[in-house]
Amino acid sequence: MKTSARVVGGLFVTATAAGIVSAVLLESTDQATSAGAVLVLIMAVAIAMIPPTLFPILKEHNEALALGYVVARTLEVVLVLPATVGPLMTLAGAPADIVRIVTGTYDLWGHPGSMVFFCLSAAILNVLLFRSGLVPRWISGWALIAVVPYLADAGLVMSGALTPFSAIHSVLVIPLALNEMVLAGWLLTRGFTTAGAGHMRR
Image 1: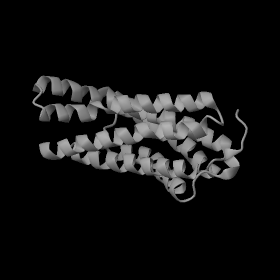
Image 2: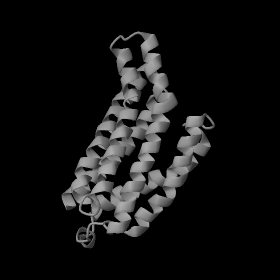
Image 3: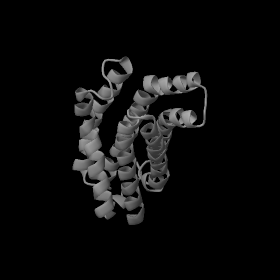
Image 4: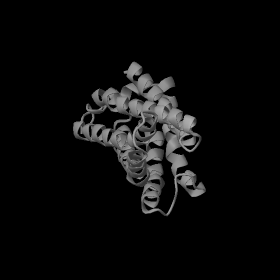
C-alpha cells in the first residue's frame, strides 16, 4: 500500500505541474501552445492513472463511493482532452474552422465542466479519506472545505462572470490546489496510515 501511495502522490504532482505550465503555454506563441497541448495530454494521462491506482484501496472502505470517484475523474479527463486536441489538430493541418470549434467548446464547457467533476472527485475522495483515516483528518477536512470556493469558481467561469486568468479565480482555487499538493507530499513521504487500512467497509 505504501508503493500505491507514492505512485498516487507522484501522479498528483505530475498532473498539477503539467496543468500549471500548460495553462501558461496555451496562451503564448503557436510553438509554445503546441508544447502546452502536450503538457495537457501528460496531465490528462496522470489524472487518468490516479483512480485505478486508488480504487483497490478505497473500495475496502466504500466500493460505491470508490466507483463514483473513478467515474468523476474519468469524466474530468474527457472534458480536458479538447484542450490538447485543438492545438495538435493545428499541427496536423486541420481546417482552422474545425480547430476553433474544438477550442471554443473547451473554453466554454470543457474547462469549467472539468472543474466541476474535479470538485466532485475531490469531495468523494476526501469523504472516503476522512471516514477511513487513511491520511490525517486535517488534510481531508481541509479539502472538503476548500472544494466549496473551487466549485463556486467553476460556476462563475461557466457563467462568464470570471475568466480562468482573473485574480479572483486564483484566490478561489488555490486552497484546494494547495491541499492536493499537501496530500501528495504526505503520500510520498508517509503513505497511507496502517490504522486506516483496517477500518470496516461502510
